[in-house]
Image (cartoon, rainbow, N blue to C red; front, side, top):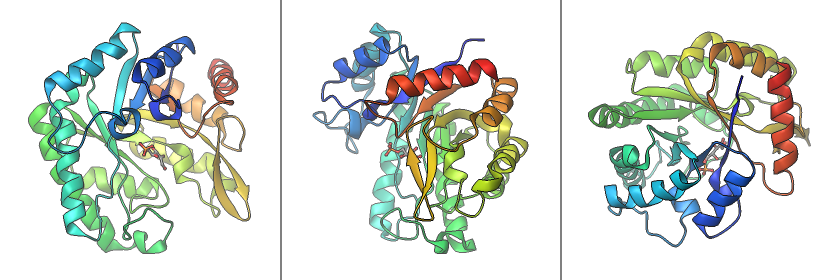
Length: 280
Ligand SMILES: O=C(CO)[C@@H](O)[C@@H](O)COP(=O)(O)O
């Protein structure tokens, strides 16, 4: 079975988007996660700047090399303590939703923010209030997505209110819309307390929201100074055998997008993923 391996575009360090697309294609990737403000640094993509023409221009660059824009990354703090900042982020994300189709893409993604302005690990994120604020923000984004027939992709992680598979399931149940789906990053649900049982955490994610996974992020982790440290794919402890055994059955051809993996590790990480997927 073909495996759809891609990469986060700004992990390819080149100021020219044309060069980035060439590199992505030459490495055999099929798709990217594209963050406009990170991959198009010399083009204004701030709020109010997008248009079908903008999107089609970018889309044509990727189409030339048959590279899919699988997801548009528009990560922001959806529960930012400064409500002006939060509103700016909400409006910018909604603008991305309006023009996603013109990029040839159906998914715009974000994580669920932080009680602090900066995204840091704090258990204050795990209380009920930040969760309910995250639900309120996601609900508003999903209402916009429903108007344009596109998808809000929510990614979980331990530095956010949606920090466990259980919390992700609660969010999905509280916003019963098919315009809300999951960007599943298994490494993001790994903590210093659960990494010994990572297989159970991965299994729980598939049990609770496997059918709602639309993108998978591939990275890896090690334990350093009693902390989780993200490392390039294949250089850590993430159990890709467990992950791919479940994924291959549940979600054939899903986009698996490498993250936190830059040169000189990219080719080695691709080979690792292809080998693990083939043997799953
Ligand atoms: O997993 C994570 C971060 O935990 C990523 O998906 C997230 O970094 C993507 O955001 P960026 O577009 O790289 O800012």
